[in-house]
Length: 231
Image (cartoon, rainbow, N blue to C red; front, side, top):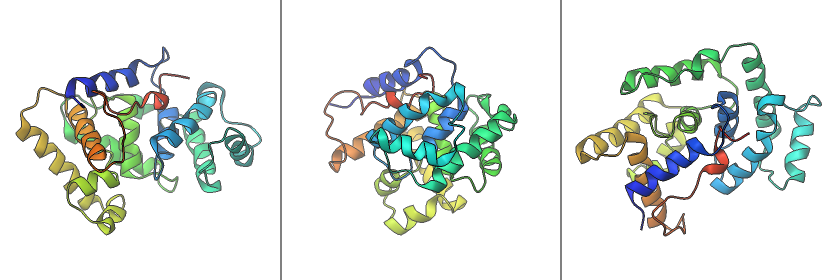
C-alpha cells in the first residue's frame, strides 16, 4: 500500500541515485523528453543521454543521436526534439543556464515560479513548457521543489477534461489554477510531508486508482533512471 513515507524514500532515492553533482543540462534533457511518454520510455532515453552529460552530445548532430536512440530500443524521439537537446547544450556551453543551477529560495513559491518563468523564456521555442521545466525542478530538487509538473493525471485528478489538459501548458492562468489547487490541498491536509512529496503521493495514488500503475508497494514507481546525479 502506498504511503507518504515510501514516497519520501522514492524522492530521496532519486536524489541519491548517483554520486555526481546535480546536472541541470541533463535534467532539462530528461524533462523535455518526459512529455507524452511512459516513465519506462523516459527512463530508457535518459540512460542513453547520461553518457553525454559531461562529454557533450555526438558531434555528428541530431541524426546521429536519433540513430543511437533507435539502436538502443528507445525511440519516440522526433527530429525537432533531438535538435532541441542540442539547443539546450548550446545554451549550457554559453553559460546561459548557469543562474538556474541555484535552487530557488526554500519555502518561497514566488521564487520558484519566477525561476520557472525566467527559464521558460530562455528556452522559448526549444520544446519546453511549464510542465517540463517543473519536471526538471523535481529532478534537481525532488524533496524541496515547489513546482508541480501538471500532466494529464494531475488534470484528470482535479476534474479537468482533456481539452483543459491540452491547453494547460500554454495557458499560464490555467496551469497556475491547477497548481494552486494542489497547494491548497496540501496546506489544508496539514501533512508532515514536504509539498513535492505529498504531490507525488497523490499523483501515484491517482495513477493506481485508474490502473495506470500496477505497483502495490509503499513506494511509487521508481524514477531512479531519471536521476540527474547518475551519469
